Image (cartoon, rainbow, N blue to C red; front, side, top):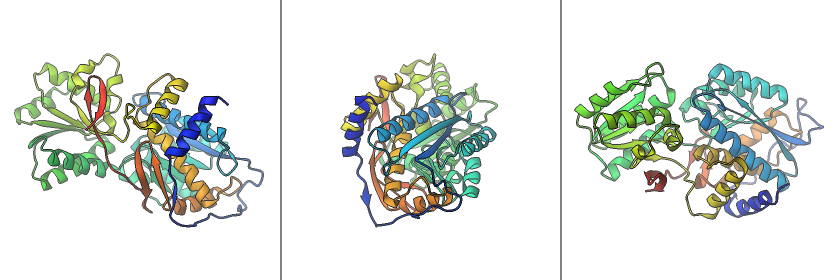
Length: 391
């Protein structure tokens, strides 16, 4: 194994702090459905590595791979190596369920995924029925983890909407706000609804709320004009970076230059082919990770990721990387072994996840409740000179 991976493992060991809040343990023996000859943990991943959202799925796939390589090089989990397989779902629910079944046939014991919300809502029905542990790095819809076998690393949609409104109000960024959102997307509508509720509670005025759908996401001239005519000082974009890049370009042509505020789906906008990155200058958005942060753990992760994959990691890679080290911590907390049944592993993980505290790339002192939601501080960045700067 490459020396840099060993070095990265040692560096992360000092950065990831695992606090054991109780002496919980999992089922020590395998059930009849367990594999008494199992010599490795089989962990699967699901997300889009082709299609419109490929940047997200590829980042998650790579983030998991980097963590798996480091963990295996450092002796594995409880002395067992990890076997890892990732399946492409093209951000499609039916394909995601098919990917899940493929991984089940392979022998998957735990799932990191899915990457996007709508497929995750479909797949969690399957993992719940099988009582398999599921840990999504980035699916934000509330229903993505509606069952007790499922946890997430990222904030939920309601949290992003609420935190965004609070940040705008607390920092007096604007009084009159327009929203452009995707009414056909669970992710976008969930954030939008909670943003409007919190904005009104904080005394902000939502002067325009303009929707589009998956079938009309290339021409935003009507939405932009209505936002402009409303006198909006800031436009909130609870959408993905592809549509955001078009909105910024079309607003520029329309002579509309408000403040812009987005959420974690904005990450990746500077990498859109053909997009003039200067149009994103001053854009603010929620993100749990910035690759230019100066802490040692982030710099080590970024250097190793760039060396391995030839690209700078986005937050989805960092979320996935943290997922794997969280799984390691929970498995060790519960003393889980790969010969246990899928259901026994899941039951042990449900308890262990509520007993650990993680210092990761995407947050410090991260904990989880029985509802699967993480507790961590949000971070807001602004794009300056083509880079993310923490506000």
